Image (cartoon, rainbow, N blue to C red; front, side, top):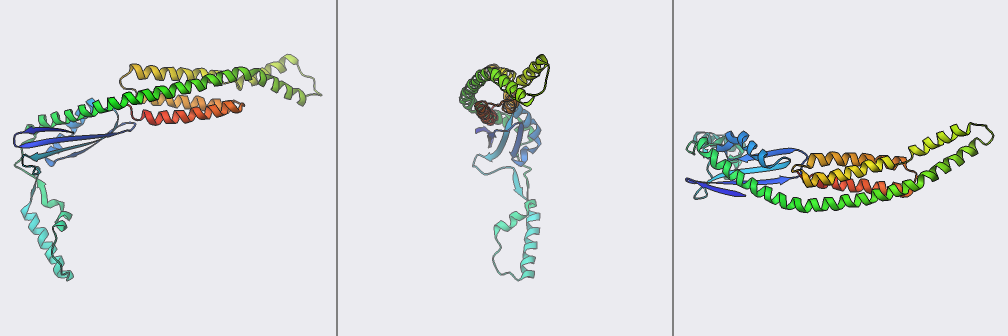
Length: 283
């Protein structure tokens, strides 16, 4: 929150931010400031690149009375007349309450004796900028903690990939031998070309090998870490990398016949999902 005093009034800006894939800004402005909304949006874009932001800017008098609205006396009288007629026609016997008038927002209108938009433009932009600078500083502090957590999760994921690679290298010869044994039992009474049989079994075993997926997954992890260290705006790129990681983990799970590899791939997908949720908090 930031505050700027100007002339006979005080301008206050409050900015709240929540994680979101894209930049989405909602303004709540005093009536006198509605004409500045597009300009204020450009100010927000300089400091926030993604997230859901709520911007609240108010103008108050030095005596803390809210400026920007005045009562339209003619419409107020008309509303009172309508209410009195309703009371008379319905036979309701109770005092007329003030809150009834708030059902008719037209009795309030922008004040004409406020400072002009030109007078307000610079101080409003100034106070919004101050609030955004505070928001950015807070997000940078939170981001440093978040980046540390993301790196630890990626390192854990990399360790799981190493284990899968180790198992895969060990399992390929076993897969080949197991496939060959099954085929030989199925065709015990049939004569086949031995070289062709070996080639086909080798191709089947290769299709069950997950080495290439592990290489790509490890490459995505390395790029993820480099992106965290080198690029100022990383959210969208990291989200894309996590989608690729999840795709590789799914392929590993579907190709492998080893129970341990399947369990590890499930753990990787769970870790990727946690990373995806955390990355939503980064710009």
